[in-house]
Length: 384
Image (cartoon, rainbow, N blue to C red; front, side, top):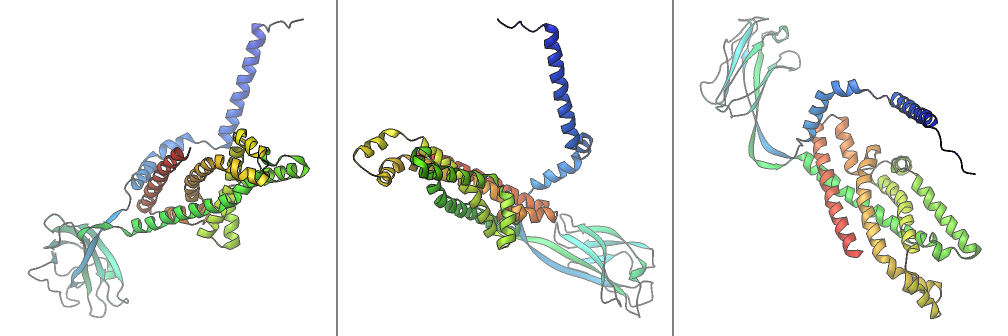
């Protein structure tokens, strides 16, 4: 007896209930996830500023030349001898030779380097030669600037010694060269590549035998073989459940935070992942060569060497190179918990709000990951 079709009313009720259930689930999810759209919108200016810093990385730098000029400036007038200003050469010239507390006077810079950064400082007397910033400006294309300086009480003459108004001039000279931030980033990027390479290689050494043990067509014969199969499968499943960040933290507490802890974390994680890939490659081999070698009277070991390994070597190579690519990406993340490499460098720069230098690290990560992705794809294309 066939069941009668549902009526339009029952279908409508069911659809309504399902819709309400979905809406309720998403409402709870949005509340628990603390989704705050207004905060996202109001934070757009800060976000754009951050993105701008990231996309203007600290890559090059010029050599800088520093020089200083200055003169004594009595406060109040008559409290100490007035300073003298040279009549030629790089100099700063005050509009008045002395002044009273609270006054404002004009300072001009003449015959300085074009585009130089100039910092004006009060060199205070009688207070262990402490400094107080007065102004900061940049010279024009002719090496000239003009700015206003306020006379504060702290710059008053002490025991007959006047404070000095000094200008520190910093200008760029010479050709562009790699910045220290770029050189440090390159070192960290190379370290990241080596970390991923060593971790992948160590993992492959252990993953190859585990991959064969976890292949049903190789070991799942008899009680001992089945026990080996399930034990290997269980081990691979367990190692794949641990997140690299958790492993990096564990090994960091074990051997100390740094590159070694990162390598160990990547290696343990990669053993499970590579071992599973290897076992699936072994299980998908063509049984024909195995049957042919077995028919000659070869034992299990000889059969694996002459009938199985030649079939799986291309896939094993492809999986290993692919996982090296993956581990480079993961190593940039575990660096945030002290796992070494470029991720650790990026974390340091973000913590110190060095966003331009952080942009250099991000640029390097993009370049390395892209380069290795092309390399990985080329190798896998040739071996498969």
